[in-house]
Length: 75
Image 1: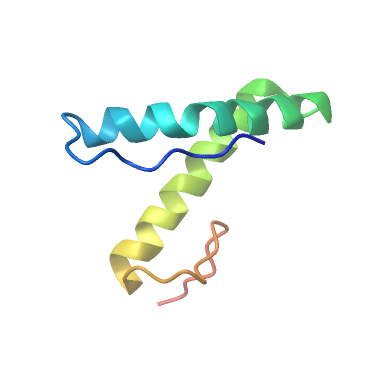
Image 2: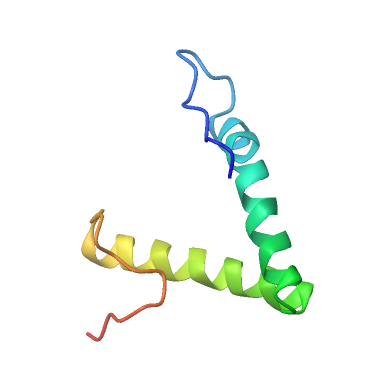
């Protein structure tokens, strides 16, 4: 898997720069899952859901490295 580049010192668009840094790794995960016979649309949906779960947990609990993408938060 490729190494993710760190942000530059003065990025013009942090979000776009981060997307570009993550793209190769992201596509590699998609390809790996499709090669394992998961449907591509389901893989993409699941990756989005995992990202949403992490975002929700971080919003509710704060940034914690031990958070998992499969939400276990139970208020």
